[in-house]
Length: 237
Image (cartoon, rainbow, N blue to C red; front, side, top):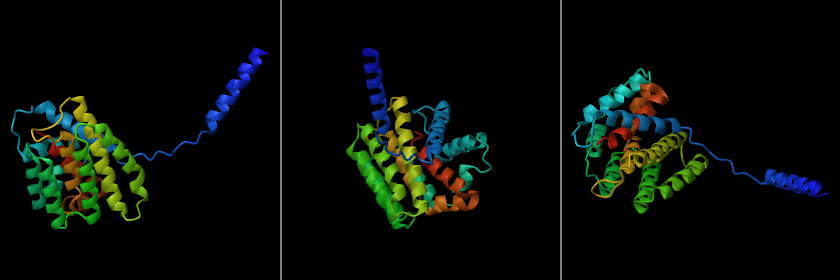
């Protein structure tokens, strides 16, 4: 009798578990670029330490080396060379002592130059604000990113091109958080976490002069790789 009762209870519990509704999880279709971003940083820091001064052009060569090893037919330096505004942006991002106020100013500059759309500007500012409000609590930032990954695809105000860029920025940001955790390096002297620099590099990489030209040269993949390279350059110290 006891055996029958136990079996009946197990059957009831297992049956109830199957009836619990599950929430559909939207995965980031551009997560591979976040993984690639971290691999570029690993390659860079295997060749350079944080005490050595490295120029933007030298850093671009590291990205080129990585892309060539991956079998791509075009390099990052070829994707960005014609864009003088991005070159200027890259030099600003190369500043070791960059703080949050500097990043807001940089976003304002490229938005005023009509290099990013209003949606891209607003998205970037909101994400930057979340990261600033949660310095020292990257888990909260990751939670916000996952929420965004669930919602941006259904936002009717965003174009498909903007959605693709936003997925790229979010993928690079969350993978960067994991990278800098793994090497146990937190923030620069102005208190800005290094993953924020990666994220801002991805944000500024959305500019039409960079992604637009790269897309013409290498299609959608070219545009994505240009944004990826921009992010990686930002935290190559």
